[in-house]
Length: 579
Image (tube, helix red, strand yellow):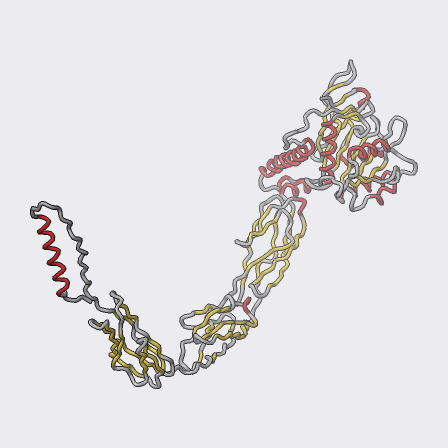
């Protein structure tokens, strides 16, 4: 707060001026200049400040309000208030007001004033008193879902009641996939299908903002009556070696979507589920009546139908059977059949050779060595049953001509079954190199149709092997397998499966039968040949090893079964495979 100059301050100022004039005038003696303290001006007073907000409360609530006051000069302040309702109390010491209203209303223009003794500031506020808060009650779910019918549109509207008319909020909704929930309208809707039949559960939480409750409601989807779908045709005819194609049709009186599946098809026949088409080309081996099952499903039920496909001979087979070439409608079919047979034969046996010689690997066998001795038979293969696989390229004895002759024949009844390998000598007792050893191991895997491991050892049956001074096949063959398949081979006792005992030795777990032409006492050739033939039919592979260059009656009978013939006795040629 500023004040006017006093008479003392004027006298002090006059003395200071007189001293200054004297100091500037001449004089013989120096005089000291008196020091006058600086004049301090008192700052101008500033008004105090006050702030605060209007108040809102409910009947029965307590009002507590204290305006915020301050003064830039830090002067002491006093607060006053006017126009207060009679239920409000004022605290002069703190400037606060307080009270508890008993009725609703708006109390306007309540004025607070703050003063530092010279200047003041004012604040106007309103006090709004609302009706007393009512005690809340929980909302109630008042709707129940009706049952639904398959294929018909369904809707369920949630409804609630609330004593305070609060807005009800629905959350955490879980419902079947076919139902959609609209949170804005609080409505479920959708159309159930057959797979939705049965009991349905919806779960949700509803709240009035204070109380939250969980609801679970169940209703049922009732399926409609259904008619089974049908298909046609259920019979057809196909000709061997001709392409066959047939598109099936289906019908459903309920107009349901129908799908078809087929079971029991042979390898040559396929079914396209997108077009419902059967297609393929049967061979003459497939001639006869083929039956398989077609299943028609409308997603709720299915019906099985037996389809009968009658496969007749190819035109070429028919002509060969009748001896009448006119049975073939087109002469090109005869030529095509011959060329196709040649190509099929080549492809089948090339696949076999690839396996035996590792031709499709990075280390093919191209330097085999096998010394079969002169006690060996040179073989001749027979088209289309088999092919030669080991051809001689050298004569080990001076004066003999090196000729190309066959020492081994491989064959099979088809690409997968009836596998056999005929050797003109016994490589298991002959001198061979590492590549010939690999050839034999590859042959065993191909014949067995699998790799040989300790977990799945090679199961052999050995029969009609000689055990004489020159031909110790019975012992040396077993020793060879013991050496090269240690802990991975099993076989029968020596001579235990010869003659009529052979058929009983050939069981389902037999991989390979190793047989020769040795004739023991009590031999019945027909019984042995029948056992070997049955082994091939049961997918038991056969290895034939020749005892010497001559043939026994049993050897001739087995060669006939294998479609192999004798091309010569190696005694007169001394031929071998050399690196």
